[in-house]
Image 1: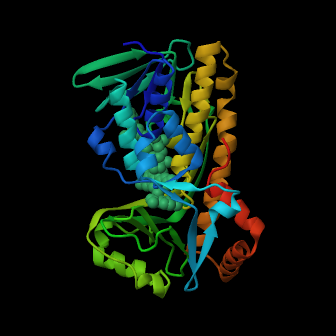
Image 2: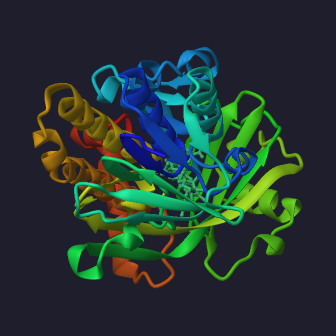
Image 3: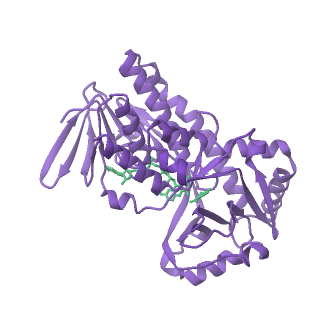
Length: 390
Ligand code: FAD
Ligand code: DHB
């Protein structure tokens, strides 16, 4: 087989790029290791920044998001038994975020690909990129007993943190920066009305908690747990009881509980691989960088990579100018590191660190007190949360 761009990974990054390139007549094939059902069963991000929503519209996949997604102008921070509202709209100069689940937007992107008869190959096994430093790279994968080869101009590694793309780069050509946090998030999805119409980020000595939502009938809650905990350790009842303990009494009293539809633990990690290019391989999204979920930057950082890559590809194919591709890694990383800084800061301010000494705890309390008392600090939080410009 032959195509212009071979995209490894059919998550939001790969599908979005595939859709955008196809709309501009640039041939591409997506190779996804899992089935579509499996990809759509993963419950992940829920908050989209303005730039991401714009990209969904440009990909002609934004209709349902615009209809069903909720615009949120603010969120709450709970601490010491009280609730403080962060007015995103006011402090960001009129911006907001869209609450719309990653599962739903991935479904919309798949439907977009189907509508345009895009090529998305599922259950592609043993995907492997080859000859990345030549001008004739190719990718192979296995379908049953058959090895299939795709010749292309460029390979996009959009295959997430555990994918094959980043691992195909020789160790001496890439630098990895990593920070692992000593806790994870236990997440529960339940068909219950959300406890608050806007998100609540709760700082509590027993550990962080987050009240989020997918709609007014579907709630998503998280609590900080030790890395040693397993999902099986947490019955629904135990989860709800612990969540209630970490919320201000007035809010806890309003919490409607119900059976969990999904329950999983995600470890928290910060990670960046530099550069995001090796020869004709370009990394995008979680394949190149991971943030702890506090601050909802993961999916949004993936979107900015796709924005830069898409425009660089257009410049290459439409004008024969490769300066955009040459500058991709540096441009993407400049924004990626700002998302890293913000996610690390939100995580550090709101979580309970097992090794923290009393001095650290005092600084953490002061960080939050300063934030809530300073218009300028709130402005900085808001501009990062709604998304820095691409
Ligand atoms: P992915 O979504 O990981 O997609 C990569 C795709 O590549 C997958 O479909 C995978 O099956 C496929 N693949 C992997 N290896 C191969 C291979 N060898 N060959 C072919 N295909 C392959 N972000 C937030 O903003 N808020 C959150 O609440 C949040 N929660 C998260 C919870 C979890 C458990 C995880 C893992 C991430 C979470 N994130 C969250 C981050 C966010 O979901 C990611 O940033 C986002 O999914 C990145 O999209 P992506 O397309 O780059 O990677
Ligand atoms: C969600 C996850 C986050 O990490 C976050 O900061 C906000 C919302 C969510 O899954 O809904």
